[in-house]
Image (cartoon, rainbow, N blue to C red; front, side, top):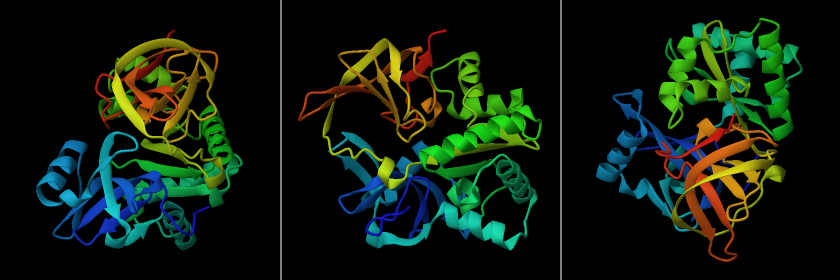
Length: 318
């Protein structure tokens, strides 16, 4: 599953001796660095979560070596040199350790065990699962979510189907109004609450187990990746309305959609909100950054050129 020469995958965490914990966001090295985003900072032995603004401020002031400007993508993110990594936290190893030990330490871990049992009941294989977020580094609190990783597109859609079956059978709960509002406040972006909730309710990549929200996110296998060696130049912002022609990479990270638009036939989303947002045959409206491939002149629309994707969105025209 992991490449020997570059074993880092999205949803892994990497730790530096400065007391910084980064979430990996890229499948490929960037000048021998791991593309990532700062998520936790260690203060006196305690890991504290930071948001995007806090992360950028902290790195700019104290650790500018981790700020990275990608010439390939004409974008800014964080990156850690491989030689600066002192620990590599892998979701599949963490989940296997917990399941092998069969010794839940708190209520969230007990709910994780129940959730895994239900998913297995509906055909999911644990070999393709991992655990990320706060639970990857044992920093969950009473109100934490459960963030599962599924490796491979087929396994991911099988897990989504298991979630759907779990909801239908009453073993898993749909997000209630409170959990959906909480999700919206964290991720809603440019959509109204009603728009956001409608799109989310049909994805089956989020639900709840005994009142705790859980999320399933896909990480592609090496053979599923389409290598992107293009160099993109930003060309302003555009709003487009078009029909989705191909949605088979809708739940990838980044999410991809092919649309019926000659100028920008590809839509890419780096924002989790718009993963799985639309299905083939649906008409969608997109506002995003236009990027041009400097070699071919091919254009694409990018939603999530910044992590918060201010002013950018994908929505189905209902």
